[in-house]
Image (cartoon, rainbow, N blue to C red; front, side, top):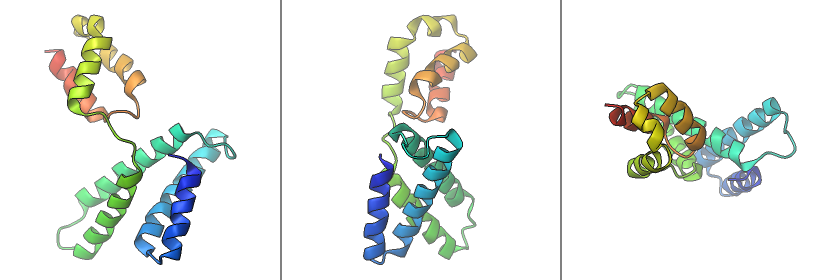
Length: 145
């Protein structure tokens, strides 16, 4: 995902007077800008950084949904709308089967050692941003048994 595409979509939402969508995309744009400034690449933001920030924002929105009290339906609908918009931009994550086959083919010699820490270090380096860390951790733990 490119930052410029997010900006265009935000302008489209503004023109359509879709406040919820505009707010969600606006928060993504500002989070990407902040990450770019922190990394020192304000003018030329790489798409990997944008994807990483979107994934982080998606997790934050999911946590908001999960921790919101059930009796606060107004907040729940607001959080759900925000989550749905961010999910549209989130990069596609690898499925559990894809992660398992990737680990078994690329890290077979490490899996044989049954050293979970060493396997996680190697796998996370390759799959960071491509697969959910929880899924990777569960699969590695299962393979180390």
